[in-house]
Image (tube, rainbow, N blue to C red; front, side):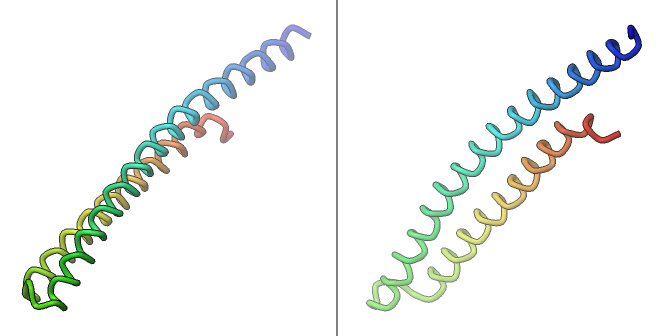
Length: 98
């Protein structure tokens, strides 16, 4: 019937929009995730280098603590970014919920 066809067309449009939005959110999340890995890896490497220098007597504990706080800050910042990306994904699919 005409009503069934209209409902089916609307459903397909809704699902298509959700797919598009969730795909966009996924790509954004992947960029965020890759940046998090890159930044986190760099921050942890810098911390480890500083810690090794402290063990070797080339730097002090205050530098190690400072480097730790910097690495921790970067990782926490990215945790927030990933939560935002997950929320964008959920919002992208929100039309699918009745």
